[in-house]
Length: 573
Ligand code: SF4
Image 1 (tube, helix red, strand yellow):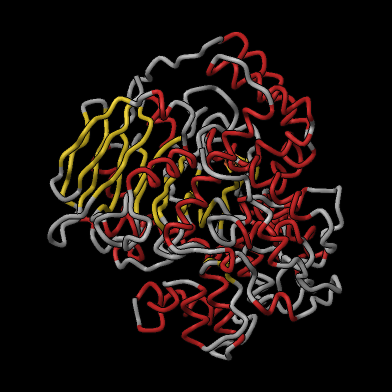
Image 2 (spheres, rainbow, N blue to C red):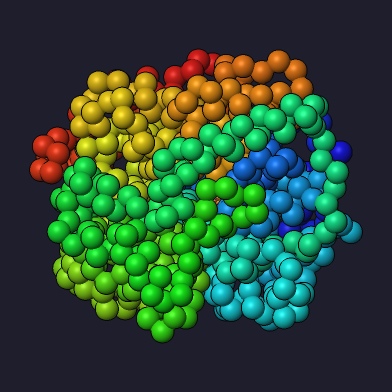
């Protein structure tokens, strides 16, 4: 019997709810949408007692489906003020499945400035005082908790950024090596966790619960075929394991959509120095590792271990978006400096994308020069030290742009765009504009689409809609988005549908599977509407419409009326 653990942080009490039939097909992202719509006033203060922090795996977590160990975190975002789901890899989701837990819901707030470490195992939840750990960042915190509780624990934690409730604070999850390198980075959910007085959630290793399947043999056969399709796909089967997501640096540069110097250009003459090819070469010399996994059951292996010049571990989960935005967009050529910035962000607990875009705004405003790696690390140190400017930067790109009086702030609904210029990739531009989450490349990224010219507007609204629906399905199943690449092939999609039938029973087809995504998107839009958002908020920043990106000879030209059609599915059921 699946359970939902409600943890009241004011009274430090637990209510253990058996999950009813109404939640049967809600998991991960859609579970967050369902709970928040049912239980929360959408206008409530994101850092106040009415907001809830929901931590939950997806619907396939208790299966052997590939890459099905994503952990979703959600609530009303302190950064965007919209509904927010952010998901990460690591080890926690499968620990929750082992305990037959459908989710944790953190409610209310401690009365005084009390801080806790929540320890979860088969006997329930223990509230430990976090006093000894306050002031620690994520790497040190993990080491201290492992000294106390053993090396087999799984940790979700906030660093100083979450303690200070920076609006750009992340929640960091430990990977298989115990490093806090997997981030639920977007939307300031670390600030929400901080507002609940929770420094860390720790799951102990427990004996696995028996996992139920409606038809285990059907699931196993479909799963095997799906895994084969995944490995046969050139991106998930070859490109990602060889070079990680950083393989996209040369790809987007070639396409003319690699944001450069705060989105003022789309090509950068130094891209090669920060490419996946360069990283693979360096790590072969330094004893690092490509083809790393961030969670058990991953077949794709896009992660890596990045060692410094002395062959010592520096960071992992070092993604294209971080490299593109600290690299080309800040003009920093030194890949080791970019890796240090990635480590700093994971340690302090802030989103790399919003931090990098904030730094590029500082460069554009003349606080430091584009390309000044030491200056960027100095500004990173200011975020860590909590200086006046550091606190502004810690609140993300939008706050930094407003502080500096910038007219070129690359955000939608207060969240920074990722390392793809939407003027040359208009399907993703539609997603940035219309996703209920704010500018989010994982919500429906058209980079892999070969059916349309990304610089032309025709067909991009439909493309974005389809991508947003299928990505929401994957976020609901709790499967990594890279395991979804092969679903462009109808045969692979058919295997996934069969897996759903094998797991849940009953008749499944494309419409029913896609319905898992549609139901979540409808609820998310409903929440945002109740929070006060309108179609006027579903658009890109003005400079994307008025400035031509020379590398693709295009500006963003999809009208507000066309954008409004993207997620118009009708009335909620
Ligand atoms: S593909 Fe990459 S991000 Fe996805 S589960 Fe595997 S290692 Fe993690």
